[in-house]
Length: 305
Image 1 (tube, rainbow, N blue to C red):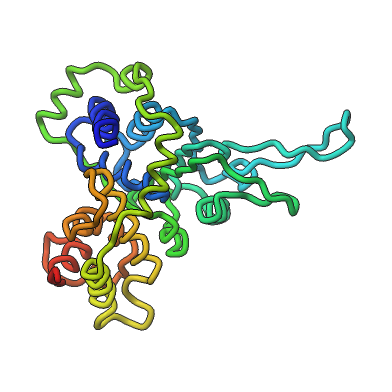
Image 2 (image 1 turned 30 degrees about the vertical axis):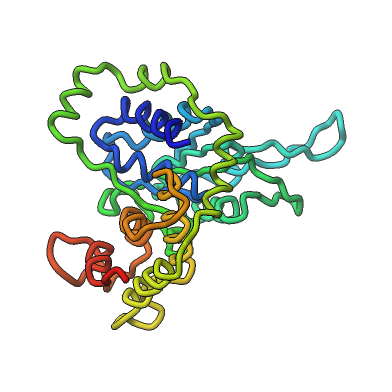
């Protein structure tokens, strides 16, 4: 398993240069059966990362460009009257794919953003009282522009919490950027990629994630992080119980990717920032040492048992 996963990561990294840890977090999020939010400025490879991962995993993929005039039906689909059959027939929207790229999700109105909620949480949509299951696996990668840019709508906390992890790509270092300049068009490279993992293996590994052992000291460590996040915070501040479950599940997926059947403290720390950064309240984000994120300060403040 580890060999196949490393081959997949190497193939994606051949397109997305200099971002090995972020690529690894993305695959970890998929194995943990979560959804990923990528927040960064345009042009750093957010969309290319999604395309490269879908090609490497052999997943069907649809891209939804979120705009201010996007409607929920444009995402989910709608029922259209069929004169031949004399009844309404449901026509699935682009949401019905194994990987969905919600590009620039915060440029759409809150009404369009909320259309993702049931799909991301329940992995199904309901139209005219009829429930339609989504494909398996189902993985949403949403890209988000920085909130200071014109024409953005901040995602509400309820929708942010639907994303298991949040990552940033950032600008590549000089060597990686040189490789990009010399390596040709990224879209051409993506088209040349071939699937490495079989669908059955991916689904099987997603099931195995939940079987990775979490010892009592690791559970206590997670609880310590949750408790520390709520200390000296306003009512309702800090990490929720769902955040704790997300942290545990991502650590299990990270351990499985490392070829282990037991979670180590290093697994918690490897994924903690991506799991907690978008869930910590504003008071956490504004306080503390310069140059450190809220999640980094929290991790540093809690000793490993």
